[in-house]
Length: 206
Ligand SMILES: O=C(CO)[C@H](O)[C@H](O)COP(=O)(O)O
Image (cartoon, rainbow, N blue to C red; front, side, top):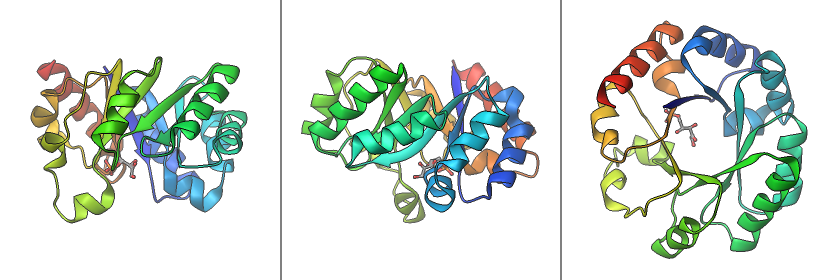
C-alpha cells in the first residue's frame, strides 16, 4: 500500500512544509506538474534534497521531447517521472529507455487514452500505470471515468484525481497499488492528520 502525496499550486517552501507535516504517513512524494511548470526542475531538486529517503515522482506529463525532459527530471533527483499514455509510442519507449539507463521508473498517465493506447500499454514491462481524473474533469463533476474506461490489468496501478476519504470505497474496486492524493491532504488544516486518516481508512478497506 503506497500513498503518494501530490504537491500542486504551492511555492517550493510551502510544498516542503506540507510534505514535512505528512512525511510519516506517505511513502511517495510527487512534485506536481504545476510546481515543475512554475519553478522548473529546481522544485524536484529541492524536494529530493529535503526528503532523500522518499521516492520522488516528477509529474512532468511528458508528451514529446522525452529524452530531454526525462533526463532533466532524473538528473534533478526524481526516482519516477510521468509520461502521457496518449503520447506517440516512440515517446513512451524513449522514456522507458532513459529510465532504464538511469535505473529509475516510468509512470504512464492514462488520461484521455483510447482503448488502443491502453491495450499497448498493458504489454509494457516494469511500468506504473496511472488512472487519472483530471482537474478539469473534476471541476465539471465528471467522475464517471472511474467506471467507463475499461482498464486491463496492469503490473502496478495508481489512481489519481480528487481522491479523498469519501472516494476510497469506490476506488477499492480497482484494487490500486498506489493512491495519489493531492488536495485532500495538502489543503487540509493538518496535512499529517488528513494523511493519517486516509491511510487508516485505506488499510481497513484492504
Ligand atoms: O496530476 C494531478 C493534476 O493533473 C494531481 O497531482 C492529481 O490529480 C492529484 O491531486 P488532487 O488529489 O488534488 O486531484
